[in-house]
Length: 144
Image (cartoon, rainbow, N blue to C red; front, side, top):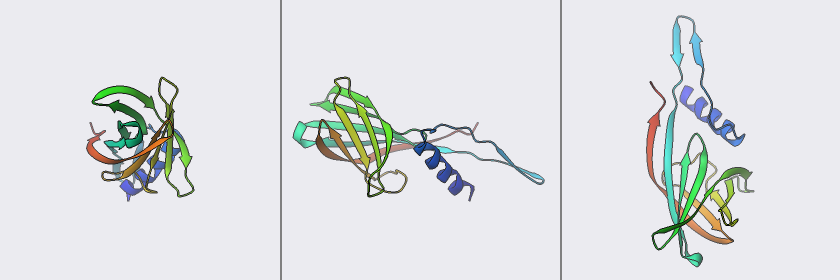
């Protein structure tokens, strides 16, 4: 129950741009319960075939899709910080940013649920689209 409620609050705060927040202590008569949050950090990799680009997007439950790195032939060529921009008509999260060369980057999480391992993303760089898979993840906890 607490985990489900915490997940819902985290997602709602994340959409409002308040991805990082502090959880208080819940007190019940005779009991003290401290809500703990586990954070997922995940990488999503894929290709934009038309541009011969490989991308790696970084996702965390605290910040969402915060960064994307682009490479060609194994060499890094650009990166961009991403910001949440709302939802598509299909209820999918959209993230946008620009590279240092002012090329637009768009990331769409192709699910209407919270991001998780195995999910698919669609990424555009300079109007060229590609797909990727969230394939690498680890969890960490804020427990002391």
